[in-house]
Amino acid sequence: MNERYAGILLPITALPSPYGVGSFGKEARCFIDFLVKSGQSLWQVLPLVPTGYGDSPYSSSCAIAGSPYLIDIDILIEKGLLTADEAKEYDCDGGNSRVNYEALFYRRIPLLKIAFSRFDKADPDFLSFINKGDYSDFATFMALKEAHGWRALTTWENSYRTRDEEAMREFTLSHEDDILFWHFTQYEFFRQWSELKSYANEHGVQIMGDMPLYVSEDSAEVWAHPELFLLNEDGYPSEVAGVPPDYFSEDGQLWGNPLYNWDRMKEDGYAWWTARLKSALSIYDIVRIDHFRGFDRFYAVPAGSPNARIGRWCDGPKEALFEDKKDWKIVSEDLGVLDEGVYRLMRNTGYPRMKILEFAFDGNPTHEFKPSNYGENSVVYTGTHDNATFIEFLRDMDIKQRKIFYGDLASECKRWGVAFRSLPWQHRSERTMHRAREAVIQIAYLSRAKYVIFPLQDILGTGAESRMNMPGTLGIQNWSWRYDKQSLSDSLAEKIAAAVKRGAR
Image (cartoon, rainbow, N blue to C red; front, side, top):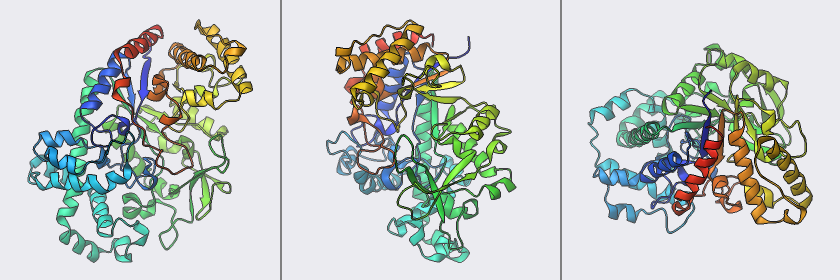
Protein backbone atom coordinates (compact mmCIF):
# COMPACT_ATOMS: atom_id res chain seq x y z
CA MET A 1 0.00 0.00 0.00
CA ASN A 2 1.18 3.55 -0.74
CA GLU A 3 2.18 5.67 2.23
CA ARG A 4 -0.79 7.37 3.88
CA TYR A 5 -0.10 10.17 6.34
CA ALA A 6 -2.11 11.62 9.21
CA GLY A 7 -0.99 14.92 10.64
CA ILE A 8 -1.83 17.93 12.78
CA LEU A 9 -1.35 21.59 11.89
CA LEU A 10 0.01 23.65 14.77
CA PRO A 11 2.32 26.67 14.65
CA ILE A 12 5.25 26.63 17.06
CA THR A 13 3.96 29.88 18.57
CA ALA A 14 0.79 28.07 19.76
CA LEU A 15 2.68 25.70 22.05
CA PRO A 16 2.35 26.27 25.82
CA SER A 17 5.23 28.18 27.38
CA PRO A 18 5.95 30.15 30.55
CA TYR A 19 7.74 32.76 28.42
CA GLY A 20 4.87 34.15 26.35
CA VAL A 21 5.23 32.22 23.09
CA GLY A 22 5.77 28.63 22.01
CA SER A 23 9.35 27.59 21.36
CA PHE A 24 11.64 24.69 20.49
CA GLY A 25 11.90 23.35 24.03
CA LYS A 26 10.21 20.82 26.29
CA GLU A 27 6.60 21.49 25.27
CA ALA A 28 7.44 20.98 21.59
CA ARG A 29 8.76 17.52 22.46
CA CYS A 30 5.66 16.84 24.54
CA PHE A 31 3.54 17.71 21.51
CA ILE A 32 5.55 15.29 19.37
CA ASP A 33 4.90 12.63 22.01
CA PHE A 34 1.17 13.40 21.70
CA LEU A 35 1.42 13.06 17.92
CA VAL A 36 2.96 9.61 18.33
CA LYS A 37 0.28 8.50 20.81
CA SER A 38 -2.36 9.79 18.37
CA GLY A 39 -1.02 7.76 15.46
CA GLN A 40 0.16 10.88 13.62
CA SER A 41 3.09 10.85 11.21
CA LEU A 42 3.15 14.56 10.27
CA TRP A 43 3.45 17.86 12.09
CA GLN A 44 2.69 20.83 9.87
CA VAL A 45 3.97 24.15 11.18
CA LEU A 46 3.42 27.69 9.95
CA PRO A 47 6.41 29.72 8.69
CA LEU A 48 9.24 29.98 11.23
CA VAL A 49 10.48 33.29 9.82
CA PRO A 50 10.71 36.57 11.76
CA THR A 51 7.29 38.20 11.86
CA GLY A 52 6.79 41.72 10.57
CA TYR A 53 4.05 44.32 10.68
CA GLY A 54 0.81 42.78 11.92
CA ASP A 55 2.72 39.84 13.44
CA SER A 56 2.06 37.73 10.37
CA PRO A 57 4.53 34.98 9.47
CA TYR A 58 3.51 35.60 5.85
CA SER A 59 5.10 39.05 5.81
CA SER A 60 8.63 38.55 7.01
CA SER A 61 11.82 40.59 7.21
CA CYS A 62 13.71 37.67 5.67
CA ALA A 63 12.65 34.68 3.59
CA ILE A 64 15.19 32.24 5.03
CA ALA A 65 15.86 33.49 8.57
CA GLY A 66 14.33 32.09 11.75
CA SER A 67 12.31 34.05 14.30
CA PRO A 68 14.33 34.79 17.47
CA TYR A 69 11.05 34.56 19.40
CA LEU A 70 11.05 30.76 18.92
CA ILE A 71 14.41 30.23 20.62
CA ASP A 72 13.75 28.33 23.83
CA ILE A 73 14.67 30.26 26.98
CA ASP A 74 15.03 27.20 29.22
CA ILE A 75 17.64 25.76 26.87
CA LEU A 76 19.61 29.00 27.17
CA ILE A 77 19.32 28.78 30.96
CA GLU A 78 20.57 25.17 30.90
CA LYS A 79 23.58 26.30 28.83
CA GLY A 80 24.43 28.96 31.41
CA LEU A 81 23.70 31.86 29.07
CA LEU A 82 20.77 33.14 31.16
CA THR A 83 19.47 32.87 34.70
CA ALA A 84 15.92 32.14 35.76
CA ASP A 85 15.74 35.56 37.41
CA GLU A 86 16.72 37.27 34.16
CA ALA A 87 14.06 35.31 32.26
CA LYS A 88 11.50 36.42 34.85
CA GLU A 89 12.63 40.05 34.64
CA TYR A 90 12.05 40.05 30.86
CA ASP A 91 8.82 38.06 31.10
CA CYS A 92 6.62 38.28 27.99
CA ASP A 93 3.69 36.30 29.36
CA GLY A 94 2.08 38.25 32.15
CA GLY A 95 -0.45 35.47 32.71
CA ASN A 96 -1.82 35.96 29.18
CA SER A 97 -2.89 32.78 27.42
CA ARG A 98 -2.32 34.43 24.02
CA VAL A 99 0.95 35.53 22.44
CA ASN A 100 1.71 39.16 23.29
CA TYR A 101 3.80 40.28 20.30
CA GLU A 102 4.24 43.79 21.65
CA ALA A 103 5.84 42.42 24.83
CA LEU A 104 8.01 40.09 22.73
CA PHE A 105 9.22 42.99 20.61
CA TYR A 106 10.34 45.06 23.59
CA ARG A 107 11.59 42.32 25.93
CA ARG A 108 12.77 39.25 24.04
CA ILE A 109 15.62 40.85 22.07
CA PRO A 110 17.17 42.47 25.19
CA LEU A 111 17.01 39.08 26.93
CA LEU A 112 18.72 37.36 24.01
CA LYS A 113 21.40 40.05 24.06
CA ILE A 114 22.19 39.09 27.64
CA ALA A 115 22.60 35.49 26.50
CA PHE A 116 24.82 36.64 23.65
CA SER A 117 27.03 38.60 26.04
CA ARG A 118 27.95 35.30 27.70
CA PHE A 119 28.25 33.29 24.51
CA ASP A 120 31.68 32.21 23.26
CA LYS A 121 32.01 34.25 20.08
CA ALA A 122 35.16 32.30 19.17
CA ASP A 123 33.27 29.00 19.11
CA PRO A 124 34.49 27.19 15.94
CA ASP A 125 30.97 26.07 15.00
CA PHE A 126 29.68 29.62 15.34
CA LEU A 127 32.53 31.02 13.21
CA SER A 128 31.91 28.35 10.58
CA PHE A 129 28.20 29.26 10.58
CA ILE A 130 29.06 32.92 9.99
CA ASN A 131 31.63 32.19 7.30
CA LYS A 132 29.07 30.35 5.19
CA GLY A 133 27.49 33.76 4.67
CA ASP A 134 23.90 32.51 4.48
CA TYR A 135 22.65 35.09 7.00
CA SER A 136 25.06 37.98 6.41
CA ASP A 137 22.45 40.11 4.65
CA PHE A 138 19.87 39.39 7.36
CA ALA A 139 22.28 40.17 10.23
CA THR A 140 23.40 43.46 8.69
CA PHE A 141 19.86 44.42 7.72
CA MET A 142 18.59 43.84 11.27
CA ALA A 143 21.50 45.77 12.78
CA LEU A 144 20.64 48.66 10.46
CA LYS A 145 16.96 48.50 11.41
CA GLU A 146 17.88 48.62 15.07
CA ALA A 147 20.26 51.54 14.48
CA HIS A 148 17.37 53.34 12.76
CA GLY A 149 15.02 52.84 15.70
CA TRP A 150 13.35 49.88 13.95
CA ARG A 151 12.01 52.17 11.24
CA ALA A 152 11.18 50.67 7.85
CA LEU A 153 13.79 50.38 5.10
CA THR A 154 12.04 53.07 3.06
CA THR A 155 12.81 55.69 5.73
CA TRP A 156 16.58 55.10 5.93
CA GLU A 157 19.21 57.45 4.60
CA ASN A 158 19.77 56.85 0.91
CA SER A 159 23.35 55.69 1.46
CA TYR A 160 22.16 52.80 3.62
CA ARG A 161 19.04 52.08 1.62
CA THR A 162 21.07 51.72 -1.58
CA ARG A 163 23.99 49.93 0.14
CA ASP A 164 26.58 52.59 -0.67
CA GLU A 165 29.95 50.82 -0.42
CA GLU A 166 31.69 53.35 1.84
CA ALA A 167 28.67 53.80 4.13
CA MET A 168 28.32 50.04 4.53
CA ARG A 169 32.01 49.60 5.29
CA GLU A 170 31.83 52.20 8.04
CA PHE A 171 28.64 50.72 9.48
CA THR A 172 29.92 47.14 9.62
CA LEU A 173 33.13 48.27 11.34
CA SER A 174 31.32 50.38 13.92
CA HIS A 175 28.51 47.85 14.56
CA GLU A 176 30.43 44.59 14.44
CA ASP A 177 29.02 43.28 17.73
CA ASP A 178 25.45 44.19 16.75
CA ILE A 179 25.80 42.25 13.50
CA LEU A 180 27.33 39.31 15.37
CA PHE A 181 24.32 39.28 17.70
CA TRP A 182 21.92 38.77 14.81
CA HIS A 183 24.15 35.97 13.51
CA PHE A 184 23.91 34.46 17.00
CA THR A 185 20.08 34.47 16.86
CA GLN A 186 20.23 32.44 13.67
CA TYR A 187 22.93 30.10 14.95
CA GLU A 188 20.95 29.30 18.10
CA PHE A 189 17.62 29.15 16.24
CA PHE A 190 18.80 26.56 13.74
CA ARG A 191 20.75 24.58 16.34
CA GLN A 192 17.62 24.24 18.48
CA TRP A 193 15.38 23.57 15.49
CA SER A 194 17.69 20.85 14.17
CA GLU A 195 17.59 19.07 17.52
CA LEU A 196 13.79 19.31 17.67
CA LYS A 197 13.35 18.03 14.11
CA SER A 198 15.70 15.14 14.85
CA TYR A 199 13.55 14.24 17.86
CA ALA A 200 10.44 14.25 15.65
CA ASN A 201 12.04 12.16 12.91
CA GLU A 202 13.42 9.66 15.41
CA HIS A 203 9.86 9.15 16.66
CA GLY A 204 8.44 8.62 13.19
CA VAL A 205 7.07 12.14 12.70
CA GLN A 206 7.92 14.18 9.62
CA ILE A 207 7.79 17.98 9.59
CA MET A 208 5.89 19.87 6.90
CA GLY A 209 7.08 23.45 6.71
CA ASP A 210 5.25 26.38 5.18
CA MET A 211 6.76 28.85 2.73
CA PRO A 212 5.11 32.21 2.06
CA LEU A 213 5.12 33.15 -1.62
CA TYR A 214 6.12 36.76 -0.97
CA VAL A 215 8.47 38.66 1.33
CA SER A 216 7.87 42.00 3.00
CA GLU A 217 8.81 45.32 1.41
CA ASP A 218 10.75 45.90 4.63
CA SER A 219 12.99 42.85 4.21
CA ALA A 220 16.60 41.83 3.79
CA GLU A 221 15.83 40.51 0.30
CA VAL A 222 14.37 43.79 -1.00
CA TRP A 223 17.32 45.63 0.55
CA ALA A 224 20.06 43.29 -0.72
CA HIS A 225 18.54 42.30 -4.07
CA PRO A 226 16.18 45.05 -5.27
CA GLU A 227 16.71 43.90 -8.86
CA LEU A 228 14.62 40.80 -8.09
CA PHE A 229 11.51 42.89 -7.41
CA LEU A 230 9.26 45.21 -9.41
CA LEU A 231 10.32 48.56 -7.97
CA ASN A 232 10.31 52.03 -9.52
CA GLU A 233 13.38 54.26 -9.90
CA ASP A 234 13.06 55.46 -6.30
CA GLY A 235 13.05 51.90 -4.98
CA TYR A 236 9.35 51.77 -4.14
CA PRO A 237 6.80 49.33 -5.59
CA SER A 238 4.23 50.82 -7.94
CA GLU A 239 2.07 47.71 -7.56
CA VAL A 240 1.79 45.29 -4.65
CA ALA A 241 0.54 41.76 -4.00
CA GLY A 242 -2.95 40.69 -3.01
CA VAL A 243 -5.92 38.68 -4.18
CA PRO A 244 -9.27 39.86 -5.53
CA PRO A 245 -12.53 39.56 -3.59
CA ASP A 246 -13.27 35.95 -2.62
CA TYR A 247 -14.82 33.80 0.10
CA PHE A 248 -12.65 35.38 2.78
CA SER A 249 -13.20 39.06 1.99
CA GLU A 250 -15.50 41.12 -0.24
CA ASP A 251 -12.71 43.71 -0.55
CA GLY A 252 -10.15 41.09 -1.49
CA GLN A 253 -6.92 40.78 0.47
CA LEU A 254 -4.39 43.59 0.18
CA TRP A 255 -1.13 42.02 1.34
CA GLY A 256 1.09 44.90 0.23
CA ASN A 257 4.17 42.76 -0.55
CA PRO A 258 6.42 43.80 -3.44
CA LEU A 259 6.01 41.70 -6.58
CA TYR A 260 8.77 39.63 -8.14
CA ASN A 261 10.59 40.67 -11.29
CA TRP A 262 10.07 37.31 -12.98
CA ASP A 263 11.77 38.43 -16.22
CA ARG A 264 14.94 39.21 -14.28
CA MET A 265 14.74 35.95 -12.33
CA LYS A 266 14.38 33.99 -15.57
CA GLU A 267 17.78 35.27 -16.76
CA ASP A 268 19.68 33.09 -14.27
CA GLY A 269 17.25 30.18 -14.30
CA TYR A 270 15.36 31.34 -11.18
CA ALA A 271 18.49 30.82 -9.05
CA TRP A 272 17.09 32.77 -6.08
CA TRP A 273 13.98 30.63 -5.91
CA THR A 274 15.94 27.40 -6.32
CA ALA A 275 18.22 28.39 -3.45
CA ARG A 276 15.22 29.34 -1.30
CA LEU A 277 13.50 26.02 -1.91
CA LYS A 278 16.68 24.06 -1.23
CA SER A 279 17.11 25.97 2.02
CA ALA A 280 13.56 25.11 3.08
CA LEU A 281 13.93 21.43 2.19
CA SER A 282 17.13 21.31 4.24
CA ILE A 283 15.20 22.11 7.42
CA TYR A 284 11.83 20.44 6.66
CA ASP A 285 10.86 17.03 5.32
CA ILE A 286 8.10 18.49 3.12
CA VAL A 287 7.41 22.10 2.10
CA ARG A 288 3.97 23.59 1.51
CA ILE A 289 4.14 26.70 -0.70
CA ASP A 290 1.48 29.26 0.14
CA HIS A 291 -0.53 30.89 -2.70
CA PHE A 292 0.95 28.55 -5.32
CA ARG A 293 -1.38 29.93 -7.97
CA GLY A 294 0.83 33.05 -8.00
CA PHE A 295 3.42 31.13 -10.03
CA ASP A 296 0.94 30.89 -12.89
CA ARG A 297 -0.54 34.38 -12.64
CA PHE A 298 -0.32 36.90 -9.83
CA TYR A 299 -2.66 39.73 -8.86
CA ALA A 300 -1.11 43.21 -8.90
CA VAL A 301 -2.82 46.03 -6.96
CA PRO A 302 -1.82 49.70 -7.43
CA ALA A 303 0.34 50.82 -4.50
CA GLY A 304 -1.63 53.00 -2.09
CA SER A 305 -4.98 51.35 -2.83
CA PRO A 306 -7.27 51.06 0.20
CA ASN A 307 -8.29 47.51 -0.76
CA ALA A 308 -7.72 44.86 -3.43
CA ARG A 309 -10.93 45.33 -5.40
CA ILE A 310 -9.05 46.91 -8.30
CA GLY A 311 -6.05 45.08 -9.71
CA ARG A 312 -4.77 43.17 -12.70
CA TRP A 313 -3.59 39.63 -13.38
CA CYS A 314 -0.01 39.23 -14.64
CA ASP A 315 1.86 36.15 -15.84
CA GLY A 316 4.26 34.38 -13.49
CA PRO A 317 6.99 31.88 -14.42
CA LYS A 318 4.52 29.00 -14.75
CA GLU A 319 6.07 25.53 -15.18
CA ALA A 320 9.51 26.89 -16.12
CA LEU A 321 10.47 27.37 -12.46
CA PHE A 322 9.66 23.75 -11.59
CA GLU A 323 10.96 21.80 -14.59
CA ASP A 324 13.84 20.31 -12.56
CA LYS A 325 11.90 20.12 -9.28
CA LYS A 326 9.02 17.77 -10.03
CA ASP A 327 10.33 15.10 -7.65
CA TRP A 328 10.92 17.56 -4.79
CA LYS A 329 8.72 17.11 -1.72
CA ILE A 330 6.47 20.10 -2.31
CA VAL A 331 2.77 20.62 -1.53
CA SER A 332 0.90 23.39 -3.32
CA GLU A 333 -1.65 25.67 -1.69
CA ASP A 334 -3.89 26.02 -4.72
CA LEU A 335 -6.92 27.67 -3.14
CA GLY A 336 -8.61 30.89 -4.21
CA VAL A 337 -9.44 32.12 -7.71
CA LEU A 338 -8.43 29.27 -10.05
CA ASP A 339 -8.46 29.00 -13.81
CA GLU A 340 -7.19 26.66 -16.51
CA GLY A 341 -3.66 28.03 -16.18
CA VAL A 342 -3.49 26.97 -12.54
CA TYR A 343 -4.94 23.54 -13.34
CA ARG A 344 -2.33 23.09 -16.08
CA LEU A 345 0.45 24.12 -13.70
CA MET A 346 -0.76 21.59 -11.14
CA ARG A 347 -0.94 18.80 -13.72
CA ASN A 348 2.53 19.54 -15.06
CA THR A 349 4.26 19.76 -11.67
CA GLY A 350 2.40 16.81 -10.22
CA TYR A 351 2.39 18.32 -6.72
CA PRO A 352 -0.43 17.33 -4.33
CA ARG A 353 -3.43 19.64 -4.25
CA MET A 354 -5.34 20.84 -1.18
CA LYS A 355 -8.94 19.93 -0.32
CA ILE A 356 -10.89 21.85 2.33
CA LEU A 357 -13.68 19.89 3.99
CA GLU A 358 -15.52 22.95 5.32
CA PHE A 359 -16.43 23.76 1.72
CA ALA A 360 -17.20 20.19 0.62
CA PHE A 361 -20.76 19.61 1.81
CA ASP A 362 -22.88 22.15 -0.06
CA GLY A 363 -25.25 19.70 -1.73
CA ASN A 364 -23.19 19.44 -4.91
CA PRO A 365 -22.40 15.74 -5.48
CA THR A 366 -19.48 16.58 -7.78
CA HIS A 367 -17.73 19.07 -5.47
CA GLU A 368 -13.98 18.53 -5.83
CA PHE A 369 -13.46 18.80 -2.06
CA LYS A 370 -15.85 15.92 -1.29
CA PRO A 371 -13.87 12.84 -0.18
CA SER A 372 -15.53 10.55 -2.71
CA ASN A 373 -14.36 12.85 -5.53
CA TYR A 374 -10.62 13.15 -4.96
CA GLY A 375 -7.73 10.76 -5.39
CA GLU A 376 -4.43 9.93 -3.75
CA ASN A 377 -2.52 13.05 -4.80
CA SER A 378 -4.36 15.26 -2.29
CA VAL A 379 -3.78 17.00 1.03
CA VAL A 380 -7.00 17.19 3.03
CA TYR A 381 -7.82 19.70 5.76
CA THR A 382 -10.96 20.59 7.66
CA GLY A 383 -9.68 24.15 7.21
CA THR A 384 -6.41 26.06 7.08
CA HIS A 385 -4.95 28.71 9.40
CA ASP A 386 -7.09 31.25 7.49
CA ASN A 387 -10.39 29.42 8.00
CA ALA A 388 -12.79 29.48 10.89
CA THR A 389 -12.40 26.48 13.16
CA PHE A 390 -14.79 23.71 12.18
CA ILE A 391 -17.07 24.34 15.17
CA GLU A 392 -17.03 28.10 14.54
CA PHE A 393 -17.86 27.39 10.89
CA LEU A 394 -20.96 25.36 11.85
CA ARG A 395 -22.08 27.84 14.51
CA ASP A 396 -21.97 30.70 11.98
CA MET A 397 -24.32 28.89 9.57
CA ASP A 398 -28.00 29.71 9.44
CA ILE A 399 -30.38 26.79 9.93
CA LYS A 400 -30.96 26.36 6.18
CA GLN A 401 -27.22 26.11 5.44
CA ARG A 402 -26.72 23.68 8.30
CA LYS A 403 -29.56 21.48 7.02
CA ILE A 404 -27.88 21.23 3.62
CA PHE A 405 -24.46 20.60 5.20
CA TYR A 406 -25.69 17.85 7.53
CA GLY A 407 -27.74 16.16 4.81
CA ASP A 408 -24.85 16.14 2.38
CA LEU A 409 -22.45 14.96 5.10
CA ALA A 410 -24.83 12.12 6.03
CA SER A 411 -24.89 10.94 2.41
CA GLU A 412 -21.11 11.03 2.19
CA CYS A 413 -20.73 9.19 5.50
CA LYS A 414 -23.00 6.43 4.22
CA ARG A 415 -20.63 5.88 1.28
CA TRP A 416 -17.70 5.43 3.66
CA GLY A 417 -19.49 3.44 6.34
CA VAL A 418 -19.29 6.21 8.95
CA ALA A 419 -22.20 6.73 11.32
CA PHE A 420 -23.78 10.18 11.17
CA ARG A 421 -27.39 11.30 11.12
CA SER A 422 -29.00 14.58 12.09
CA LEU A 423 -32.76 15.03 12.50
CA PRO A 424 -34.28 18.52 12.02
CA TRP A 425 -34.67 19.23 15.74
CA GLN A 426 -30.99 18.34 16.24
CA HIS A 427 -29.58 20.82 13.72
CA ARG A 428 -29.02 23.54 16.34
CA SER A 429 -27.46 21.16 18.84
CA GLU A 430 -23.84 21.66 19.92
CA ARG A 431 -23.59 17.90 20.34
CA THR A 432 -24.58 17.40 16.70
CA MET A 433 -21.90 19.88 15.61
CA HIS A 434 -19.25 17.84 17.39
CA ARG A 435 -20.64 14.59 15.97
CA ALA A 436 -20.36 16.18 12.51
CA ARG A 437 -16.76 17.21 13.26
CA GLU A 438 -15.86 13.67 14.31
CA ALA A 439 -17.58 12.20 11.23
CA VAL A 440 -15.69 14.54 8.90
CA ILE A 441 -12.40 13.58 10.55
CA GLN A 442 -13.15 9.87 10.11
CA ILE A 443 -14.14 10.00 6.46
CA ALA A 444 -11.05 12.09 5.72
CA TYR A 445 -8.85 9.40 7.28
CA LEU A 446 -10.69 6.75 5.21
CA SER A 447 -10.36 8.74 1.97
CA ARG A 448 -7.87 7.99 -0.76
CA ALA A 449 -5.86 11.15 -0.04
CA LYS A 450 -2.18 10.64 0.73
CA TYR A 451 -2.11 13.41 3.37
CA VAL A 452 -4.83 14.20 5.91
CA ILE A 453 -4.02 17.11 8.23
CA PHE A 454 -6.25 18.80 10.78
CA PRO A 455 -5.60 22.01 12.71
CA LEU A 456 -5.27 21.16 16.40
CA GLN A 457 -8.30 23.36 17.06
CA ASP A 458 -10.45 20.91 15.07
CA ILE A 459 -8.99 17.94 16.90
CA LEU A 460 -9.91 19.67 20.17
CA GLY A 461 -13.27 20.93 18.90
CA THR A 462 -12.69 24.55 19.91
CA GLY A 463 -14.55 27.56 18.56
CA ALA A 464 -13.97 31.14 17.43
CA GLU A 465 -11.80 31.91 20.44
CA SER A 466 -9.06 29.72 18.96
CA ARG A 467 -9.07 30.98 15.39
CA MET A 468 -5.54 31.58 14.13
CA ASN A 469 -6.11 34.30 11.53
CA MET A 470 -8.86 36.39 10.01
CA PRO A 471 -7.63 37.22 6.47
CA GLY A 472 -7.56 40.87 5.51
CA THR A 473 -7.56 42.09 9.13
CA LEU A 474 -5.02 43.31 11.66
CA GLY A 475 -5.52 42.71 15.34
CA ILE A 476 -4.16 41.16 18.49
CA GLN A 477 -6.30 38.06 18.00
CA ASN A 478 -4.49 37.06 14.80
CA TRP A 479 -1.60 34.61 15.14
CA SER A 480 -1.81 34.70 18.95
CA TRP A 481 -3.77 31.59 20.01
CA ARG A 482 -2.07 29.04 22.25
CA TYR A 483 -3.54 25.78 23.47
CA ASP A 484 -3.84 24.66 27.08
CA LYS A 485 -1.49 21.72 27.64
CA GLN A 486 -4.14 20.02 29.80
CA SER A 487 -6.31 19.63 26.69
CA LEU A 488 -4.00 17.01 25.17
CA SER A 489 -5.15 14.06 27.24
CA ASP A 490 -4.28 10.40 26.81
CA SER A 491 -7.96 9.64 26.16
CA LEU A 492 -8.03 12.13 23.29
CA ALA A 493 -4.85 10.58 21.85
CA GLU A 494 -6.38 7.11 22.04
CA LYS A 495 -9.57 8.29 20.33
CA ILE A 496 -7.67 9.91 17.46
CA ALA A 497 -5.32 6.94 17.14
CA ALA A 498 -8.35 4.62 16.73
CA ALA A 499 -9.72 6.81 13.91
CA VAL A 500 -6.29 6.86 12.24
CA LYS A 501 -6.01 3.08 12.50
CA ARG A 502 -9.45 2.62 10.97
CA GLY A 503 -8.29 4.81 8.08
CA ALA A 504 -5.20 2.60 7.61
CA ARG A 505 -2.78 5.49 8.08
